[in-house]
Image (cartoon, rainbow, N blue to C red; front, side, top):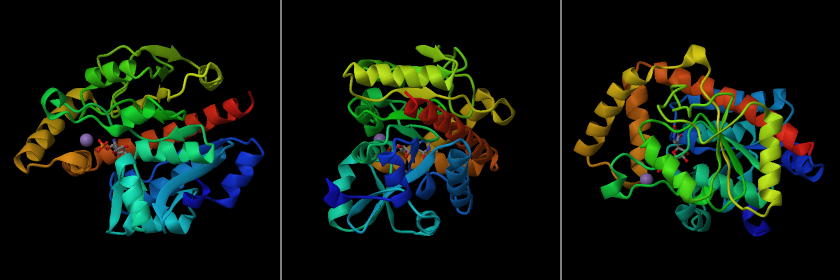
Length: 303
Ligand code: PSU
Ligand code: MN
């Protein structure tokens, strides 16, 4: 495994000393947000993790290796380069053996975090079951990976470009606990509401860390989805967002967007048509997730 894994010295030292480490993904940098906000956000998120007592490890692929921990210079590269692959699990062997630059999705980031020994991972939103999946079968590999790899994921819930109800059903099928931090309703990324009750609720990082500890000590492999609602002052009401989502879904259908391009297309389209308001919310919620994720990592490391 070490042939394919390179851990940044600071991250390696923290892991060896049992100190809290938080993994971060890179698809959000290269395919989820425009430049320069993507680079600013990635660096600010790393700083937020540090400010709350943990060591950040942004994960990506290049030179035939998986990197757990990037330098600021490498993050800047991923934010600007044109030829960066969006790498989910199925793409890993190709991108590694071809020595390409790869930004990792939730699924691939989780797997590399697990290889490195990192247990807590912070992102904005996970992939899930797409609307219309009954016929398209478009279900993100993020969900299957969460069913088998023991890395907890902190996100702002599930984005309403997806079918939230079907995503919650799929998480249940895969045995993945879904716990919302501090409220009883499951959040939907831009909004604190979704119309669906959260399967579980916990109100402190310590309680969440205790649940992770219990799950993995029981030998129950797999992830826990920790849903952290967007800060109230940055919330975008669901009805407003739904209009933009419908337009984006229609545009995707018209342009025959398929496969791995669907999610980046929808994200870009919506960001472009909400005059940056959605981008502001996106940045705010991922920073908030970084704070909560670091607090959970600190609590988990103390157990
Ligand atoms: N949702 C977001 N922002 C993102 C993504 C999803 O709000 O950046 C990215 C993540 O990297 C996630 C990936 O793992 O999209 C899912 O892609 P797909 O639906 O093709 O599995
Ligand atoms: Mn898909």
